Length: 276
Image 1 (tube, rainbow, N blue to C red):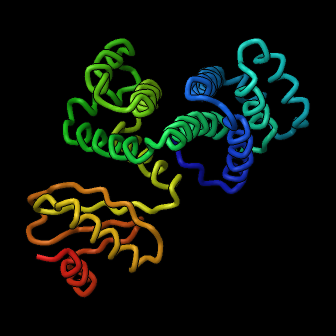
Image 2 (cartoon, rainbow, N blue to C red):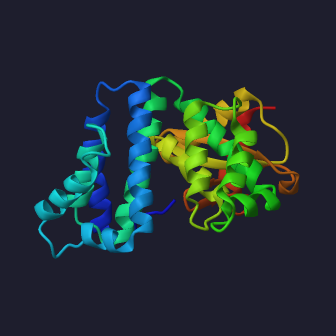
């Protein structure tokens, strides 16, 4: 995954996401999955064809001309839901051609998360993505295998199937497969963490990454989430990792802020909120 840091590309993504939401309106799960697959296919094509990628993202060419070219190329290959999204992306102004590729990938992932949200399974998908990220991140050999862009695609697909088939939500499975197939050399565990955060943001929550020496009960996690919500004045999703090296207490990361022994007052208040 890639974060779009330039304002122009962020604006382009935001505009295209509006088209994506229109495309998913009234769509069933199979239709949304098909939409996501087609967006992934276009992103993969543009990722591998540098001349075409630069042509479709060339800001010196009129947007309508770029869109007409895209229509000629993709009208027979894309369904009625995916084509308008691709045309919107091609007509937008991206800071760099590769940003358009990353944007299309992100839109495909967003479509799958929309599907999970509408079926009431977004919580489960978020939790599974987080846990899979921790599992893969904790196994360096597995991380290297799945993150290697030069690795055998079929071999990685077999590993992913063994890891997630019939064990997770279908949306989680599809997201993991796509991420591994197009990791672009980035650690898969990091990509899974970003996907989990995308899931949380769809519910307008922030994510607190919590390390604790001992497991917390469900009630303790709920109390911790409530305490963090009071501190940050917004809903907080707790992602818990048991880490014996923490010692006593908790280490909490919310965005760029770390709550640990250096902020003893807050930490003590959080400990107290958990009860005995």
